[in-house]
Image 1 (cartoon, one colour):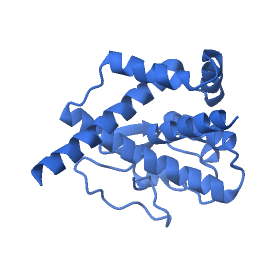
Image 2 (image 1 turned 60 degrees about the vertical axis):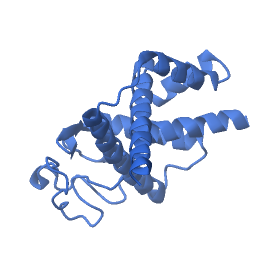
Image 3 (image 1 turned 135 degrees about the vertical axis):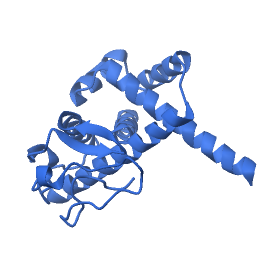
Length: 195
């Protein structure tokens, strides 16, 4: 039982990490349009098109979101992806015993998802620029290790079904996380070497 809870927490962290640091949505927490980005090419959807889209205390999956819900450094994040990631996060939080019906939990999940989406997207873009890749053999090995943490392959597939994720989607999230981890290691190594 403890192992299953640990696996759910690990999966939750993978999904949360796969889905962003800093809230950069159509509106900030104060309800005012977000200011200009520090990153060249970053933009936010037109505030006129998203006015009222961010409502404090309203779960993300109950908001009237624009088709392009978020633009991170020029990369569009659609409403469907945002809602799917939110739904996955909600299931994983519930599996960890967190009551997602409270206003506090809903606000926390919304902010955590947006923050994680932003940081993960920016880090993935940097990994692209740096040419960081993960070979298929390593990805296969990491995927096998993730599946082995479950009681059975059927339990792994049941978890994927519960969160609404395909095996290919999980594999791509894992690839993205490995690329980001490799980028971070590369940057730390560079900083250590230059000091």
